[in-house]
Image: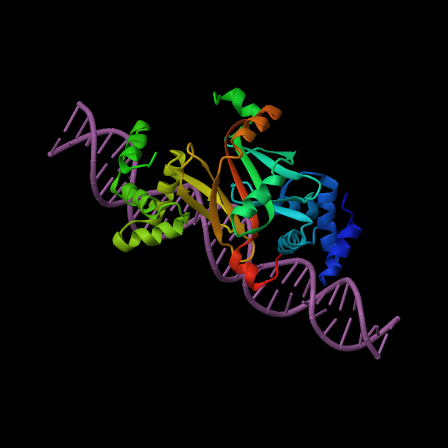
Length: 149
Length: 149
DNA sequence: TTTGCATTGATATTAATTGCCATTTGCGTT
DNA sequence: AACGCAAATGGCAATTAATATCAATGCAAA
């Protein structure tokens, strides 16, 4: 499902939230930028270019809200700040390769774990609704510069 | 390999580090406590009971050092602070179930992904050295209180 | 013992995020 | 179309984890 602003609006309304201009502007950033992951500060900088009067607190609040709605997905790459990206769950799962040298993050898609959720759920008492998989290693650029093989 | 203080000492010496009393005390916390994950603050509080003169900065430095040595493993559960636990890599991989309601974290072991690393490595240009898998859901206690099924 | 260097502990600092609150705005109701 | 009110916003203060700084300490080798 290629998420549109209107669909986001419906999701908001369903939980008694409003689609304010600020929320729309922030949402549009993700729709425009595609499958990239952005920090709150990233979003703030992008948004400020055309809308200098938007507040950083609003950016944080909106990102949290959109994450609650599962429109965005909040991620943590271990560098102290959260990243957000469009949640494309349902179609395929998005995972990440993180370079231990330079911190670069590369995404990749795979469905291999969909079955695994049920296995784990059966073993534990958890009702599992989502999962996140991260691989750590060395990216191509860093492998060339230093001997990591 | 059931890690002992002596093995840690060897690892330290191999990289020209010393096994200071503070480092030994902090390491012992993890050896005593078993497979639990602790935040830096947790470790600080535990250590202070018997050794009130130990500094928080030393705790942070030691946890980082032991993580570099791969004696500990630094983890992020998305609540803003890092956790550390004994690294049992080599035997089996340790993963986590995180409750979205109360934040409880439960560990579980599984080898299912060992083969997957090679598949991903082949598809990407990364040299993969580690991975981390987290499942999000609702723990048994929270499932009883609210309807999450 | 003396010198050198890693380590430590206290404190200051940084940086991300959240809290607070007065003001504004969207939106259903008149 | 104007009203009323809760929701939302923006600016800034406060919080919190983590790191940097630096003088003092302590261990190891000469």
